[in-house]
Image 1 (cartoon, helix red, strand yellow):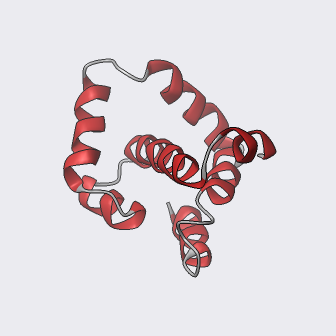
Image 2: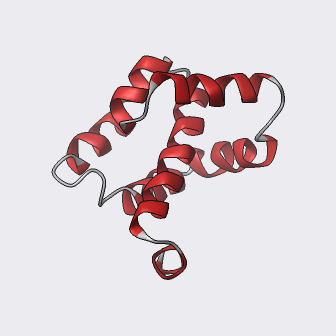
Image 3: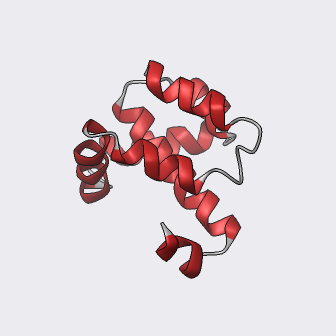
Length: 100
């Protein structure tokens, strides 16, 4: 993930990880409230992504998320990208992902 570290600021890395996380957890069937609590975003942000998905948006990223999450790659990506945002909570984030 050195490419992201070099290309994106810490804030941009966190935003990207949260957006990917929203799509990942929506695909897993989690409620917008649970996703918002886990990722520290508003429920309305999650619902905006959910509405966009229902309209056929994010097709490519959704396929990428599904493809990579099956092999555990997405969890590794999310963990590395959100390590800054989840300082002190990374362990609980990993546990949550394992439970999903």
